[in-house]
Length: 369
Image (cartoon, rainbow, N blue to C red):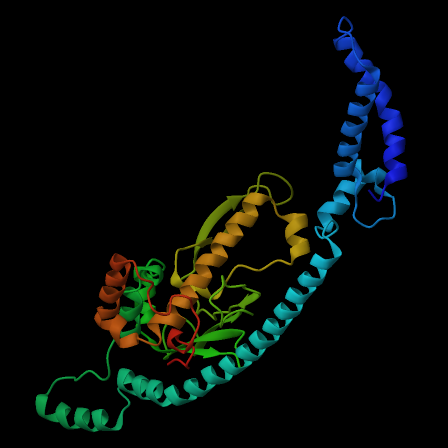
């Protein structure tokens, strides 16, 4: 209706072709030219109303059959009536208010997580002492028993953490027999949430061992929506460098090959080449995949590579959440296997395993150790 001039131009151009086609098909049938003109005019006008109206009343809808169609796609509100647009703006305002409330909610929740992390830390510290056998009462009893029994009395709970990890299928799949010999030296595992609630760090504390020099191995995750039940948005993940002792690496093995030069001044001479071959190991967990920038991903990765990276990062994050949400907060239940039985029961009942979304104080966010 707002494009009357445009419609008339389109009508004048189109009537002739429509009339010609109509007469060609029915040239032996008597027709009423006035009725045909009226009918053709209505058809063209109706078509142009649907195809050319752009809702802004400036009469520029003639180009909508080409680039104008994209404009409609880019602005879905272009055909909405003004009074409806006002209502949409009201909804937008309400949504903005909700966003502000959610931002405050995340701040408050981060403070609450920090509070209970502080309250739980003494419990985790005491747990660590019992596991390591460094508690005051246990130490005195051990010293008294050893002279009388004439035998060595074990301190703490040997292999506590490696046993607990072995009962979590997702983690156990990564552990090899060679890893077990190293993981018996794992004394404590901690999870520390970021102060702003947008990430967390895992710490694996080791006693002196024959495999590497590090006392603590770390893994850090930056997850902006960590405290929400949404699909996690992994912004960044950082591992650490393991300082392997000579010949003790569990993530690769050295293969020595002899090569004989076939030409040149060194022809006939033999040299030994050492190559590193990757081996399966839990300790690859501390060397996570690198997250490329969106631009790098678009320019240098094909679909298959992107899918493989997404899968690798998904597994990596699931393992991290296995520690944060399950193993660390309920360590003794995973050591005894009770947590595994409970998890199987939850799965059979069709219920979600508590803490499965990775968020909240019960999900290991309250400290660690």
